[in-house]
Length: 268
Image (cartoon, rainbow, N blue to C red; front, side):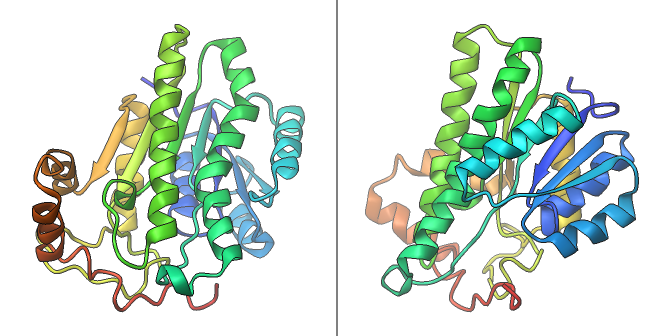
């Protein structure tokens, strides 16, 4: 099992939403936490709430040089990272032709490339000690695509592929470093304000507290994959159906129209 107490955990997207909750929960479990975000005010507020076990770090995750500088800074000031949680994410929520190139690029840099580069710069420390845990917060949208999430879904599919390839690569090398990918449906954090679900008992909008609790439990138990809710697992066998049947099923479940009233965070 991965030990949380006494570990050094780095969490991206720490100033709000799931990232903020993970930082609080990790600190409560006795971990030293490095919170990474571009929101200085949010990090300062979180630092006051957590206290000594928390180290805030500003970083633009779209900038590879900034990520590399972050790694050197954390290693110098805090030591080797035991648990890396790639949580930061952005969403545009527009139809593809309405999405500007900068927004699409940002989706991939934050959602897909940042986890790769962060893992790349922290992996040597983990390999040297032959221990560590790399966590990637992907999405149910990385399993099933939907309207108004074309760039987001594509970037989260990339995050899923990254986790799988890294897991197999580490196994191939005989490493004891563990990976976990987390794929939740929509979470009620504000990031997806306005989304709707047709069958709440099948595909509920998830409570952040439940996602945080289950994510930490998955890390502790070295689970390779966590998907929420259970119905999302059905997407894999459903792909054996003819495409037209699969698409009709996604429409009947309400997934295809779930973003029709999307607003997102109004302060973004």
